[in-house]
Image 1 (cartoon, rainbow, N blue to C red):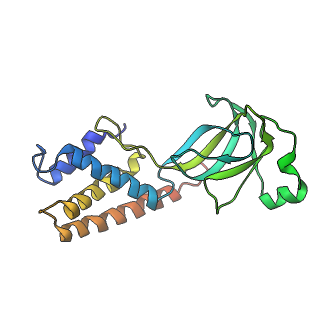
Image 2 (spheres, rainbow, N blue to C red):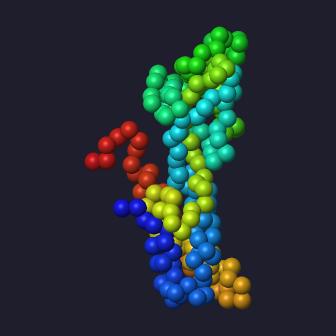
Image 3 (cartoon, helix red, strand yellow):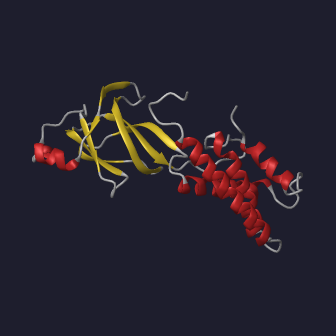
Length: 214
């Protein structure tokens, strides 16, 4: 069952002995929670993965949307709703250029056969054949950053990260509260946050992609 933002913040309020939100308003705690989500995504790039149809641009060079951090894979051709078509395979740019030096000038096609990426340019990639105008869609997988959560939303990351987010909120509140900061307690919660996040990462890494969890 998804964890609601309001339930997570209520737990934070209870730990802070402020269940009626007299000292720490819900909106203030929500701001700290969104800071926690941003911190988790920065420290663990697998925390928020997006699979979405990407409208291509004419030509070979394609750019991920604004919420993207880095490309993971380009799976298959699709339509705007994500219905799958022909699979797409990854190739190295050097191999593509050696095999087809004029690949940027190949006849355009809305059906992508290969894509090539460069880790030094994580938000952009190339497709072959070049896309026509109007262009098609591909199913892109990328590391992303979620929009700020609202009080009525569910926690935007997998439930596994909720405990780490809870600890980060407590750290942020105790470190940044004007006139009532408690750096010593804040430091303790930050260490607990880092320990919890490290364990979350280890738990995810024990499950290898493409292999059953047995």
